[in-house]
Length: 74
Image 1: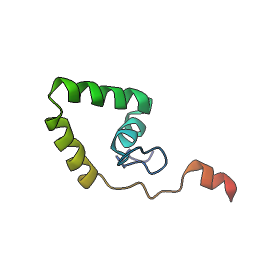
Image 2: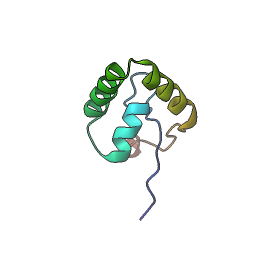
Image 3: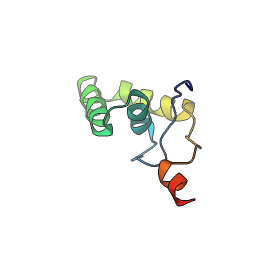
Image 4: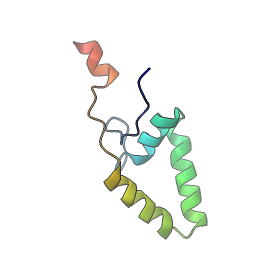
């Protein structure tokens, strides 16, 4: 079994793909991750979550693996 790795999503991203990547990693709906992110950001006066998102965007690598849709085309 291959080890799970965290990647930024290129298929389901809205801004940088951080929330979509976290949703893929934890195998939950991306909408729930985005709602949790917005909720925490509002409760923490936005700035700490904004800084977290920018750092995560810079640190988490982009997913370069082929998507399942591309595998089916071949």
